[in-house]
Length: 224
Ligand code: CTP
Ligand code: MG
Image 1 (cartoon, rainbow, N blue to C red):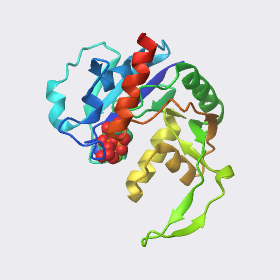
Image 2 (image 1 turned 90 degrees about the horizontal axis):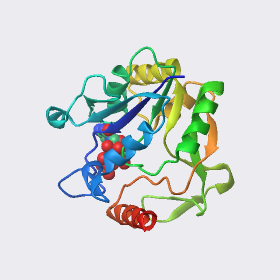
Image 3 (image 1 turned 180 degrees about the horizontal axis):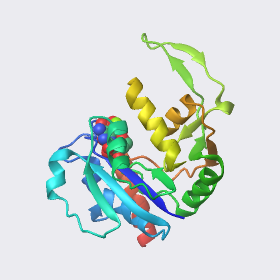
Image 4 (image 1 turned 180 degrees about the vertical axis):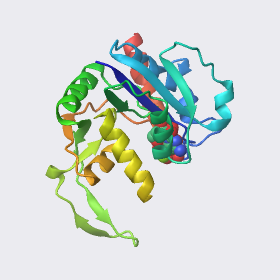
């Protein structure tokens, strides 16, 4: 089995703030992005990892021929960055995973379960049941409606697809000018079956500055 992993890492981290985008900040002394990439390289079924970085940074990354990791220029949106990485993924891979650069804590065992489901059904993702009650909030900051939490789940990555399905949904979305915040929303839109694996609560997306503090403290705990 051959798997390609696409890692969009071309965002600017506006919610996180600061000069350097969050994916390049040190976490336990090494760039956050490196933690994420290395975790995928532990899996021998992963033939290739393609990382999309902001165009100006491309000149400063080292591309080693024959290496499993390569870099491409990302785009203005996450979806465009994924599209650019997909173009470099190669035609020979059977399965393609898309994973946020800023989720360094995904479990390799969960990834294997998602891959198995995607092989069988076409597409799969990790998602976690919601524990908070979810309200719809109006522009005037009053609650409009309370949603039924029991039917909702929060999507995580890695989201995994049979390669032709990922190519199809991204092509169609680009042609139609549809921008999704993840790939599964596109797969659902175009009628594909997507299976869910119960995700790990520790697979956080580092979004705000306090998420980095949480990440640091977890790594400290495991080092002790
Ligand atoms: N991403 C990307 N290209 C973009 C925008 C986002 O590759 N044009 C990537 C980010 O680098 C990140 C992932 O998509 O790995 C998830 O996005 P998010 O957490 O929203 O990161 P940012 O877009 O950088 O942050 P913000 O939305 O706060 O600006
Ligand atoms: Mg963003």
